[in-house]
Length: 419
Image (cartoon, rainbow, N blue to C red; front, side, top):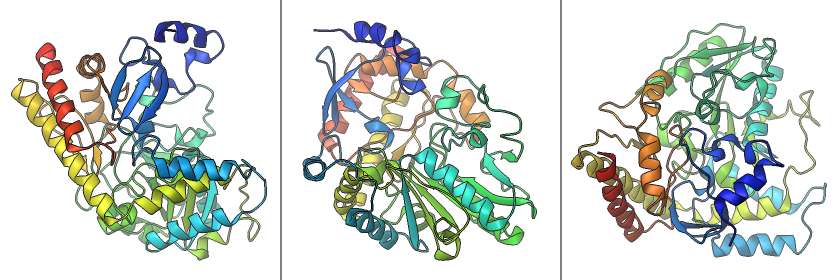
């Protein structure tokens, strides 16, 4: 049997850092990453045969749990017909109809291959539609690795201890304005759009303050700018109709990913026809991709959304509440100051007495040295959290009450060691 350490050493000879996404290298928690061989439901299994209760779930796509039979069946059926065509398919129409039907105000959607593509394309569309250059983002919100969006990014950027990114020129971010999360910025008629995670899930988990999202809506309306919701994480996880339905605030453009791919690479952006008609071939804003609307991804996304009905969202929220309340109670009873904020079925974990409201506050808690200890305490006992303090926990429909209870029992053991 090949060990995780042997695989990591081998990977480092041919892959930068041994990983294809930086946080996977365990740089912010220390130690050697585990290499997954397979997964099922709430569990993943590594190269050494260890089983873990998984709360990463590929950072969100595993909302049904790993390898759900209906998703695997859909992918298998689609693959047997060919994996990519570079031509339109009915499957693209079906998934687009499903997304449009769920989101109030969304009339048209364009599929891409990643969340990064979705956000960069939405911003290009916003600039093209408004004729303006500047965009506003919020410190600690991560919108993918496009140059203009890496200014003060959260999650993967923050986990690497980077405030920005080498190779991103001053010109690339010259039109990017960074504001503190949960503070409505003053904007003028030079701003094309404000882009925001409606729930900041890349600085741990920071909920929007009362009135923040509506304040952004009002500010954009007053300045003639567009409001973009980056729902790559929150889309179809917070509720049946996404963050707009959950918070009662409608943006001008939406970005999606994660859930709508059912575990395969996919992203999407969309809005009303008034804006979407600016896209080629109808308008002058170009966006394209050979693998956009890939038939396997469309099949997996359709199977996932078909299973995410209102009852599923009710179950997800109950599971997340059980997990968040349990984490807080177990850690506090063990004498560890901890908070596990929850928004819908998203759960965060901070070690301290107060909940953060912005990136500076989240960063202070994320870098106080506690998270790596609880991470390894849990991992060594069979529970996998994300290998970075800036990520959220993603319980799925496969995380039963018994799985949550088992997790909390393991947490209690890890907390004793931590104390």
